[in-house]
Image (cartoon, rainbow, N blue to C red):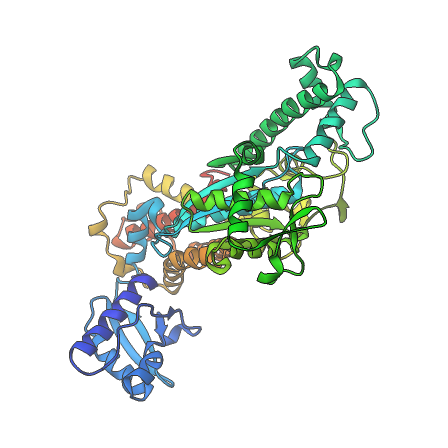
Length: 553
């Protein structure tokens, strides 16, 4: 019985007490079930009686006794004690805890998934690096965390569309085109241009695809380098991210907003809502009406739309596609952007708290031999996604970047994450899965099969280390749900490390397979199910992080 299943059992007990007239309360939709710090206090504890006491008009302990009476009659419950001011300490019946292992193996890849976020349609935008250079280390963090978050939200039952917004219009792309032109012609890169070996590589590819491009008039030449250069650069960005295990459902072009008249329609809507005015030859959105520190221009005095105007149109496009909430992941250097974006959401008539969520992430510093790693061989001034993968591998890179809370700056030690030792967190977790896989292979070689789920004597699992492992496995659905609700993939990584340690302690204390001429017993089979269940959870958790679960290491 998992904590989620026990939660339902507690609700049933409360409902039974209400039906019998012992309590006059509404059955709560949510019941808190936790593992007590002291194992002697039972398998689980709940404070439901204390929460219901006021509505029931009775002392908490009286409510607890009423609920406990009904709870003791429920299947799978061994004993219930009322403790302290009204806590209910629950000990499961023999075998009820062990069924967690059977349920996990039976559910397979579905174990841990819930319907907690069912019905939510979310647009998750992350990375969204400009197509003016390869993905740098900051974008790499968002690639790892964003992809993990998308997987987490889906595990919670939400419908998620992963989206990449690429700014293929505006001044930055023009500077990129001029940089390519200069590189192709053998001239120095413009002062405001882009440097790095990749610029010369892309320029050479443009010339190879369009041999006469350097003979065109400057305006036409810049346009060709812009179109072809962005196309080539973005193809490389997509290739690099795909090799990192990150792919998007939608790649959205900013230029389409300009070409379809979406910007003008967005400004017209804001104007109709009474929030647009003209001043100093420019068009402004009165964002100060919605808490922003100053009003923001939509159209500059020269008639060109601003990036903010494109943001307005892009937000409306997402909402028109039916998304309930727009979730955007940005670097910490965009913190000032939050207020104006919330203001534009309010200005179009939406609720920023309900329809928008902006996550800000801190920087990543790479360290090797005790010193910072600053330069990329290819980009010249920044470290790239490919540099990190070359140094530690994709699995370690993804795990390391998702392991820390996004609001925490990371000093990522390349020496640590490249080691094949237990102090490397991803190796520690993957090794646990590989160790279990070895046990299961050895069992198969001995002719020992798991057998039918209904034939497992889960009551055999009574050892302290077995129960520790079972409780840890039972926590997995709740870990996934809370991590999704809190937008915190790092909670999954930390859970997996604790689970791996719990498994190793179990394995060191409880012999799984028989030796020599020893007979296979029901305990042998039950422990095999426990091992298989742990493998399922490790595999499912690593999958949420986009990390492989090797069977051999």
